[in-house]
Length: 165
Length: 252
Image 1 (spheres, chains in turn blue, brown):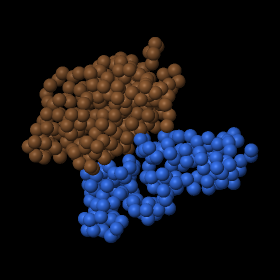
Image 2 (tube, chains in turn yellow, purple; image 1 turned 45 degrees about the vertical axis):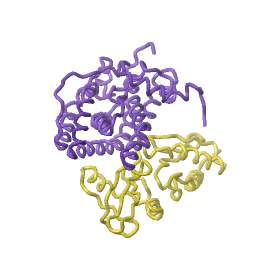
Image 3 (tube, one colour; image 1 turned 180 degrees about the vertical axis):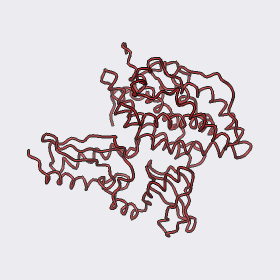
Image 4 (cartoon, helix red, strand yellow; image 1 turned 90 degrees about the vertical axis):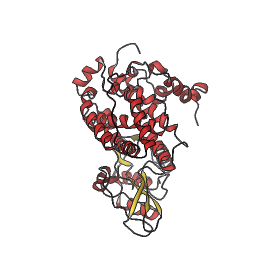
């Protein structure tokens, strides 16, 4: 078959419908997991990248991508895993950040905030419930590899924070 | 493997470190002292297993025998494992696991930092990916050394004893093998002997903040990279490899 920019756009459109299994409101494209879609000698190649090395969702995402492309009748295609450059929370789209927040997960602060935290300084993460900045990290490891566990010192609500990587 | 294959050996060493320590941390699942730390240890385990997959996938390709990551993990016996002995030590109590993790994380971070400059594209990519995760591990284990050391009399006594027990297994991390020389010269792998000074400095800073003391013993046990292991590794493999050995090629 002959590919064209429209065909590539068609593949992206399908990929936008694939959701993260752990955060089922956000597309894998918005998460920054889809690194590239291109035409290689008549074959669509989709590059995907893992978020955390051991994230169990990675395999599920790969299978969901394959299923979605099959269902949309896209062929032939190949899904490849690439490690470099490593995934970073900076790859989350603005739309992705907004959806995370709506879903109840505080989106990652910019990288410098987390670097400060890694140096042992406090970071300012806003409580999703009441908007207070007086929040405290309970644990830098949360319910999934990508999240840290926070609590608000004003309204006492616990919440997840999508930590910077 | 008949012919010498130094890169295979080194990559397998890193993969086995991550796999075995990841397995040990996984044993804490449901047994952590508090929920948050149970979750922390299993999160770190997950990162390490993920890193092990990347290394062992690569080692399988380097083996020249088309081995998969699963072949590497499940179809080798004790003598073929190249992990440093520190990674296979028993969990003991929380302090024992923290001491083991602290010494290893400090080393792993420095190793990965050096390996992000590797001339080997795959090792470089794995290092760039893993160092972000290991930065969090190192922070967590260092904080716990400080919290236990500068905590109650009992926590201090336990972490001090744990540090003394694990100490003799730290030296091996800085011993390179004769076969590493060419790879080091070519910029493929870091020279682990060169990481010692930075490790000493980082470890001493944390130990001092924790009001603890490092042992002065100089005897260091080695053997892991040559396949000479403690008695503990066999038990780990017996548990880890049972299913794929009892039901070869089982899928789900």
